[in-house]
Image 1: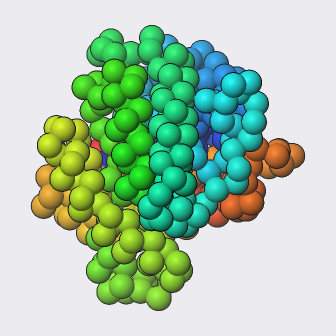
Image 2 (image 1 turned 45 degrees about the horizontal axis):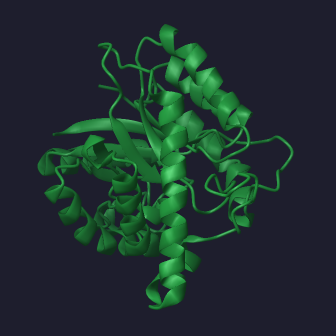
Image 3 (image 1 turned 180 degrees about the vertical axis):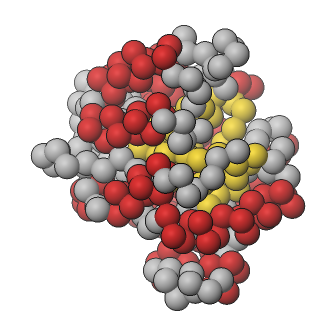
Length: 300
């Protein structure tokens, strides 16, 4: 069913990061957020969200932001070990090689996703939507790792293990159209080659996953925020948004306008991997915050 969903990723990456996302929620500039459960500040950030919840005029949808890149292994015996700093590419390459390593990874990822699901449910179970109904279970992942077949299979196994498969209402399928980025004046030539590669790769992987989720009657939607990852600035979003809306209406689907508005300026912590130390502290996140708060970007 067609709708526009302004979305903020990485809630609970840090307290400061989360406070800025809360500002956007209070201003009714985001419709949904994704929550990292395996950062050291998770409970503190959830306390802030739950304290604010009763006074929010518009309650956002909440998604578990599965994190297999950095943070802590919640499934570890003591719960304090840092995840070995992964990357999307490293996980993809390891999962593409058959044998014992692949089986070991699937077992570890399944256990960790189940632990993150449990942590998410523990903190959100009593929250209700604007009509007083229980919030739907929604899932996505940090840097779209759940689009990797091995991680997707690990997620399904974790949902079975947690008896939550029938409760899931939405899993992000990270795909967006490419042509408009290549042929729209003012946009063409401004997209980083690595983001174009990411767009094509995720789009390719999405075909199989979309079919699987369709058989499970789980909503998926489309994205606007892959090719312009980290650079969803006001000017370019305003230029592309009408085309994206037309595309979503044609597909009759949810269009997630994906952004990362919560910049971190606190002292770096060892739980951040090398990629996130760069991304979380990037000034580009200020641009994405400005885009979301801008009255020039319309809301329905």
